[in-house]
Length: 134
Ligand code: HEC
Image (tube, rainbow, N blue to C red):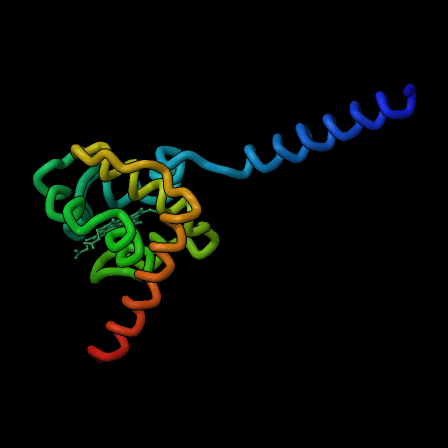
């Protein structure tokens, strides 16, 4: 019994410990926006759609979360791939897109596994599209 109890405590510690580490690595969309996207998207550098600009974001929001996120991730004209931040994960990028869309009237959620898969499918399509155009 004693041993079982101890094992329980150790398991709980491990689970909470690792959970804590995983949490610390996850950034909110707002945080990524501030760290990476704000330099261009606050002032609208090179016509970047500004945070909170409902008019600029309305047609983008219409594209749908998976499509818009994938296109921005791959890069669109003045918008550099991954927001110019090669170490950014696709999930954190997607959250930042959702944060910006929501600042301008969108009702997007942080992506779940299903949405991440949809984003990756759109990303593949987009890369093929861009190759065909060239
Ligand atoms: C170096 C400046 C710059 C940075 C940094 C940047 N963007 Fe952009 N972004 C742009 C510009 C410019 C456009 C407009 C592109 C166009 O339509 O010509 C844009 C467009 C977009 C769009 C709309 C794409 C479309 O299909 O029209 C999204 C979404 C976006 N950015 C998300 C982000 C996110 C998320 C980040 C941070 C992780 C980020 N951007 C960082 C410059 C930037």
